[in-house]
Amino acid sequence: MALERLIKRAIEECKCTLPEHYLIPRRNRDHSYDPTRAAQGYIGGLRELLAIAEVKVRSYDFRHHAVSRALSNPQVPLEAA
Image 1: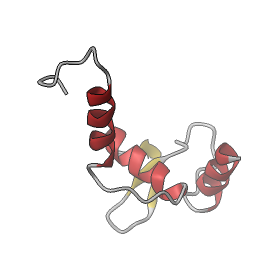
Image 2: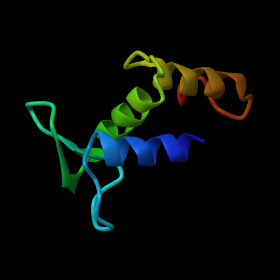
Image 3: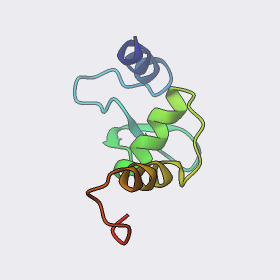
């Protein structure tokens, strides 16, 4: 289901119609897409995926989750968490 939505978005919104086009293309400053270039870094790709999935997160949500998991593990020292 999610992959189908991603492919549909790539074709309809981003104009990614050729096999060599990226599924998550780079967004230009004018909010158009360049299907021949990948999204900038993993942060850009992550932001695009979260936007497609309509998931709202803050910039520190993932870091806080990682710290919480580290603190709950008795094998991880407090300093490392």
